[in-house]
Amino acid sequence: MRSYQFDNPLAERRGSAQLIADTLRDAIIQGQLTAGEPLRQEQLASHFQVSRIPLREALRSLASEGWIEFLPNRGARVAGMSASEAREIYEIRASLERTALELAFPCHTSESWQEVETALQAALKEKQRARYVQRNREFHLALYRPAQRPHLLALIDSLHMRGERYLRLKLAMPFHKHKSDDEHQQIYTACRQGDLDRAVAILTGHLSSTGALLWDYLQREPHA
Image 1 (cartoon, rainbow, N blue to C red):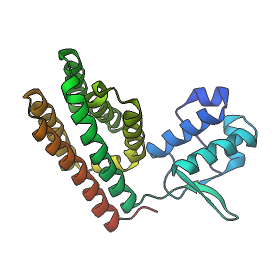
Image 2: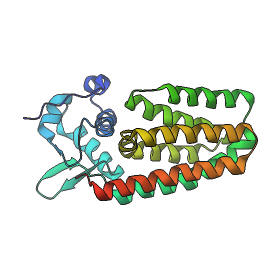
Image 3: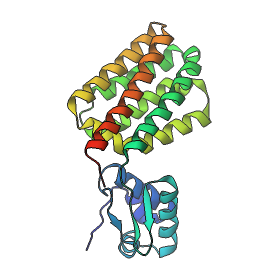
Image 4: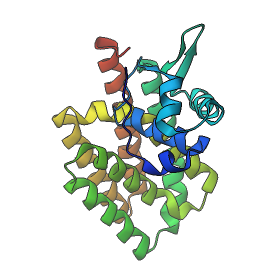
């Protein structure tokens, strides 16, 4: 029998549908729940000490976001990883983040650039993969935050979260992790030199090449 262990004790204490969904989503992102793994509702309800109602609400929410899928007469399972989804996520990110950087660039101040540099240095020094994913996200969002476009940033943030499962595949390849760090440094340097066109070109290439890399990898080694 599957024994569930997750890293969000708050969800276990409060048991709300949203907190359960957040816990399960994090478990999928971090690989505690793997692609194709069945989600046993009875055992999950027992683990979170809730009735089936908030649990089903949480599962429906995750299904609408694409994290899990329901199979006829077989219940729910963690959704598989898709080469086409990985590529599309990074294609959309490239378009949205290009716009965000162009809008944010003239609004940056010395203080906001310091926040970008702090996020960059934290990412460069981070060795733990799960924390690096968060540092990567913080760096990108710090670049765009001065644009003051909350809906745009929310879209970008949601795509970062949706792509975290795929980014972890890239981070397992040391050469590509170092290349990504170098490109982050180049984006920041170009921005600080006032060369927006170069920064945008590096950023879009950085994201597009990641999508292509993941597409190729998942085509060769598909995950269920």
